[in-house]
Length: 183
Image (cartoon, rainbow, N blue to C red; front, side):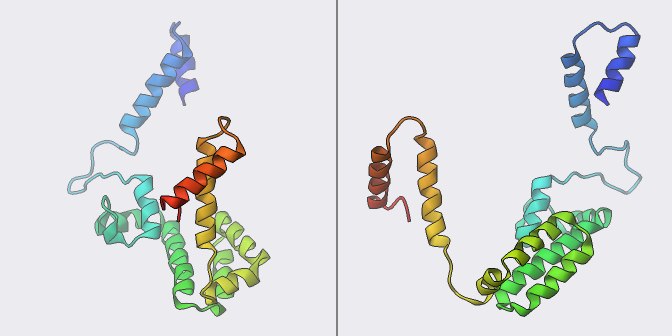
């Protein structure tokens, strides 16, 4: 869109830089994004941030601060595929909460029927390691503690990148462990 506008104004004699046009078009898009003019009488125009929509995938709707029930229903009416995604995520979560691995293959079939490529890719990963996922559903074991410790050590390592030796990393990790900053 910006290049078309730039082409038209250059035809009319504009000699300024392309970046000025890009900045103007960017600001214009932000001002008028999702605004189709004046709302119809009795209707409100509202904006929902993408991050708030993503929060509804992981939290109950009342826990999401910037979205109320009416806005959410309107959004779901505008984008019906989101309702499908939300239902699939809730049912996947319930498989783990109820510890019912028998429902896993049924859930994977439902995902494949949606034709949502990202979820199908996820189910392909589950299928490649089906036994491990099935065990994760029904067994109480978790490697979360070990993964958390490894992640924290990696954070320390990234912060120290290029400045210290392995010995310094080791000493810092041990010191943080003694202070109970790790685990």
